[in-house]
Every structure is written in C-alpha cells, then in structure tokens.
Amino acid sequence: MNTKFCKVETDGHVMTVTIDRPEMRNALHGEANFELGEVFDRFEADPALWVAILTGAGEKAFSAGADLRTPSDKEDPRAFKGMPVPETGFAGLVWRFDRRKPVIAAVNGFALGGGFEAALACDVIVAAESASFGLTEPKVGLAALGGGIQRIVQELGPKRAHAMLLTARRVPAAQALDWGMVAEVVPDADLLACARRWADEIIACSPSSIIATKAVMRSYYDLGMEASNGAMFTLPEVHAMFTGADVREGGKALFEKRAPVWSDPQ
Image (cartoon, rainbow, N blue to C red; front, side, top):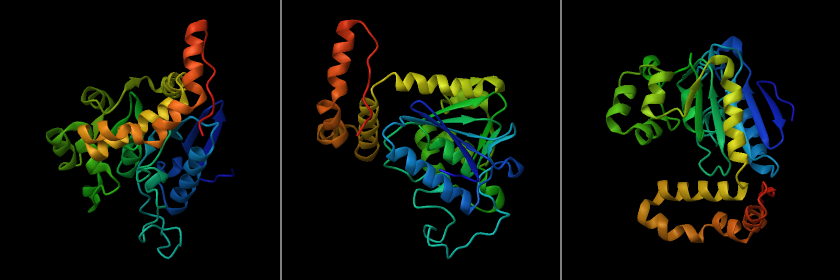
C-alpha cells in the first residue's frame, strides 16, 4: 500500500512500520492516524504477516504524541467521536483491543503522550539507551485518555503508576527496564536488530499458538483468573489451534528432530 506518513517494509513474516514525520518528532495528526489504522488493518488481515515492529524515523523520537499544531477536520467521517483518530485509536493501535497478532515497539528517543500510549498498546517494548517515556498530557492541559492511564496502572501497579501519572514526568530507558515496562535496552545503533531478534523468536513459534495465547491473555484481562480458566477452551482461537495443522506439525517435527514448518494462521 502507498503511505505518506509512515514507511512499511515486509521481510518474510515480519512487517516493520516506521512513523515518518521526523520534522514533527513523529507526532501524529489525523491523516497519520488514519493511515496507520489502515496499515494495521492490513497487518491483521494478511495471514502471511505474523509479527509487526513499530518504530519512529530519526534518532530523537519514537513519537512525541499528538500533533497539536496541525488542524484536524472534526467532520471527517473517519473520525471517531469527533477525534482525529480511527475507531482503533491513536496510531491505529491504542483501542485495537481485539488484535490477534503480536506487535513490538522499538522505541528510539522519547515516547511521550500518545506516542507512549502506542508503545504501551504493543505486546513487547524494546528501547534504545537514549529512550525515555512519559504520559505528559497534563502539562498541556489534557489527560492520557488513549488507554495510557489504565495500562500504566496495569503494568506498574498503583503507586509507581501514580508517581508517573500525577507528575507527568519522563522515565529514562534504564528505569523503564527496572520497572518492567521494557523487555530490553540496547545501544541506539542496535535497536532495530534487537526488535528483529524478538520478532524472530516469536515467529519460531506456531502463529496459531501465539494467536491462541493472546486470546487467553485477553480473556484473563477481561474476566479474571477463574472465569478465564473456565472459558478459554471455548475461545475460537484455542479451537483453531487444536484443530489446525500446526499441532500435528509441531509433534512431528519434534519426533523427527527438525525445525517445524508452520502454516499461516486463518
């Protein structure tokens, strides 16, 4: 697909999406949000794409959040509840609660406001040593209403979350790693290689198994431990895993002492 505000590259089963507004510190206006929504729609719909990596162009910013300088058309029919975002939210991600496939955030520079919310909406965050994170909306009279407040409380627990949310402070990459928000911190030059290494570890697993795992995780978040444990065998993703080709291929490959050849998920 042709894109104007991001670069999209595919390599095997991995799609890399680079927000490409470095002159705006990769802040997103309406058109960029709508475009990213379409990109991640395509990712979800294409069975040959198993994992996505999201990063930002340049060295200074993953994303500075919402572009407050560029006027938005509140009458745009694509706008969700009058906001310059698709129904799936900022960056096409933060309200995409039914997402089946893993997305890795490779955070270069600062991830602030909606930019941090987009990273939090991903499954795994890896960060450059220069990265920093913050829900800084209160500094401009707003609040982190793209899921950031809820996800930070869920990720960090209330006291650490309050320390970030009520001060709007930035947290450096090393502290984010210590707090468990970030899976790995690497030198800036190694960031994309690190993200690709994580993606390769994921695609070494059956994509149907990964989709089923994410479905059970979502069920747990929605229902809690006991109800989720009872409901998980009724999930269509779990049924697809048990009835698909990969469950047979996995056992056969183990017996034959070879790497499995997984099928694209349906």
